[in-house]
Length: 81
Image 1: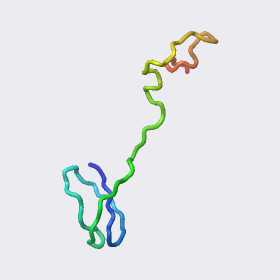
Image 2: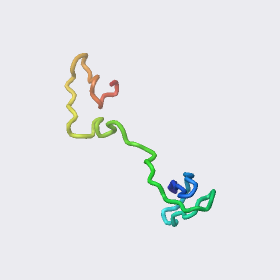
Image 3: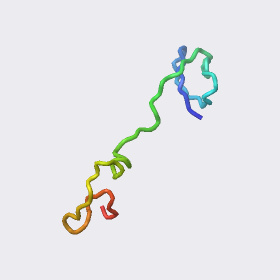
């Protein structure tokens, strides 16, 4: 169930409420009974970094050529890199 954030227009308190998608939005403040408005909050996660696509699953990954030392030390497909 998602958590929604509400702000009271009377007392200014900000609080969270766990609600189903199908639940109607809250209309009254828990503290003073004043009108509340649903806030737009930042997401709880962010996708960062290259991830699996950058580590060998796209078509631009160079093929392993052996290189110095007889191995693929810089290759993302190598188990020793």
